[in-house]
Image 1 (cartoon, rainbow, N blue to C red):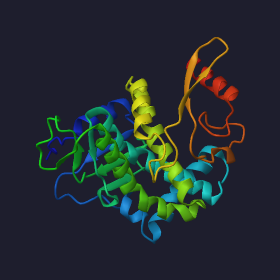
Image 2: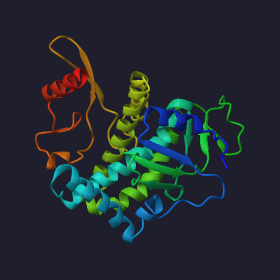
Image 3: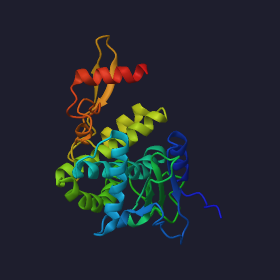
Length: 282
């Protein structure tokens, strides 16, 4: 039977159109979270056992296939966390950005499958534990809605929802990544900002996303580390190029030292301009 639209469906439909390599399936009431056969639950990643090893085996195989080398275990774990956290953060930030609705997704309410060949980013099966919205939202009267006073309160809901899901995940990944506290939450900051920034670009709303992410993460919003950290670079011709400074390093340079990310703290402004200019030309 088809699942009736939720208060979040429109946002996820727009995301699917912009980013077809990621699929989000909202589960109907009473349906079990998928587990096994390619699926892994968020909760299982936070518990001792085989689930984490199985999850990271996929990353190890992917690194060896794509780069012809085996990464250090901490690098593999860092890649694995990124590939989980990036789409999970979109579950929360995309409805906030498009609909001004902020769902809650405890780790028990999310399953992830990376094994579908035609979906490069995988698929998520989810069930929201309610959502926050503004008083004038048409969905404010729904039983699962929680009305908050204003935009500032809604921003706080975004930070709380992301932290609720990621806190136990970061605690589980941290020892394998050889990172703790501040370094882990710096990665979380980057996943929130760069995921929505990328999707907003696909939707033609990069400028609005930049402004709203600056407001969402202005700095000093614990447990997140740093701000959205957007800035502009000027080319020799006077063209302005948007960039940001990551709060963490993804460790990709350990595989390709000559090919750092354009927002990496290791990438100087001259190299950023060259990379961004080449990308725009392509």
